Image (tube, rainbow, N blue to C red; front, side):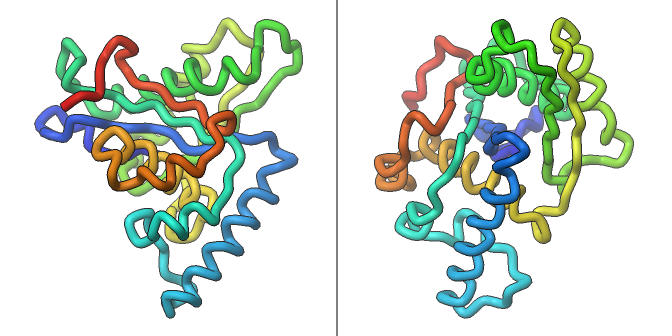
Length: 209
């Protein structure tokens, strides 16, 4: 899931890619819990059950009720990058690689873990062109060829997939923490730091305006 624009003509300072990660045995439980909270909100707001609730539709208090798993977000500060983004699709692939490398692999500690892992990565298909669907999977398999792990990319419509919606909520929260902390200040205070892996790119950049 990504937030912000990576088009070379965009004036948006930040771009974020991320979501949440878990082991397969926890996936259904996590989605079920979010689905339950999602239905509660729709009834409270008197919305159609088929309506997709976006992050901006929820108050901080409502977001706090949705406790999460392990969130992972990489925020890119385009102001401190020395080169402009020429191709948004290529950069998105690179952003996902950096996210995995900096926020997920350190937790799994693959250097000491000989268990083969299949990474199943689910992505919102709204901004993906048909000809690009296989690019990310091939790219990740190549970039991480030093490991015996595998990557499988799946694409879903966020309107019908609660996992994608939950990922959107996670990445949007931390994107706003850099863009304007006042938007999510109370929510950030309630989150457990140990449950999240969030970092800025480039690492030596500052989020000062």
